[in-house]
Image (tube, rainbow, N blue to C red; front, side, top):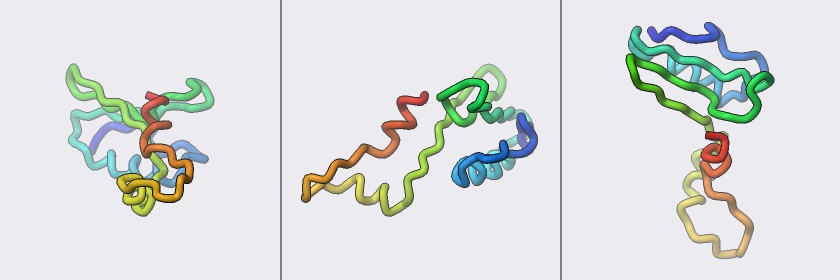
Length: 92
């Protein structure tokens, strides 16, 4: 089980972030997972993972499977659509 900092998801985190937090617990023992404190650090990645001399930053998207499927299709009616992951990429 990975080492998590903090040991429990932050109160008030979106459901997507909490689900990923519980999935990240299953990583190997030599992985450290840190959840960013948004109140202290402003915008940025939701998690960062470290293992040996490597790091990975993760931003969680609230997109549903239906939104992800529609994002790959052309917009026939001229509605304004924002590419999935654009806001998350900006946070990173």
